[in-house]
Image (cartoon, rainbow, N blue to C red; front, side, top):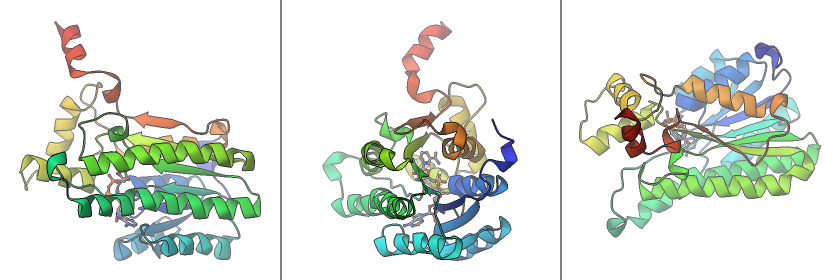
Length: 272
Ligand SMILES: NC(=O)c1ccc[n+]([C@@H]2O[C@H](COP(=O)([O-])OP(=O)(O)OC[C@H]3O[C@@H](n4cnc5c(N)ncnc54)[C@H](O)[C@@H]3O)[C@@H](O)[C@H]2O)c1
């Protein structure tokens, strides 16, 4: 593998939802590896300050609006003349419960951000990459909820499953242009989003990030005393966009401490 700190020299990358959380660490690690980062997010102040701190730029971008995503891609083309990488990471979660009470308005808003946001990202990034014939790499952030039921609301789960399908179908089309499309599926990373979801779900509004991390370390991973971190996801993404992953496309890299490969019951059998 190349020197870890020069894997992306000269590359231009957009990270949607890059102002904080998983997207923040992906942006930071890719910048440390030489990429010019465009953070596309709705968190204007936080995003602008963070982008500056990593030598990148910020653009206000609501991924549910196609024209906003198109503008982010245009910014890359106008300022740097190309786009090599897009990380479609922006996402939201809800606390919907039973299918029998599913609020279609709620489903629509999750589809708008989580799924349409990724469609917009792949569409406009691919257009730019194809027109410049510069190949490229697209990574979409899906979730352990895309491959295992019961981890999140129906609305969130269906958006993440659809991202998986879309990334595979676009990988099939875009391979001839040298564009790779892959997914990462994180599980149980204590971010603002996850902590809020835990608070809502458990009815404990004062739960701290440490308490959530502790719960996940005990129940949400096969690796004792370990839950996933932003850095775990960032390193996986860095690998997927690097030359070293040049023969990998249509892949879903699950980063879950083994959670989705085993049932709780099986673990119990081994412990006897
Ligand atoms: N944290 C986890 O355990 C976990 C697990 C599986 C998947 N994910 C996925 O990882 C991604 C990042 O989530 P996170 O955990 O870092 O949460 P987060 O809430 O910390 O970060 C999400 C980011 O997306 C941005 N965003 C939200 N709506 C947007 C919109 N309409 N347009 C542009 N940006 C928008 C937010 O402002 C924020 O910066 C999401 O797609 C999430 O579904 C997270």
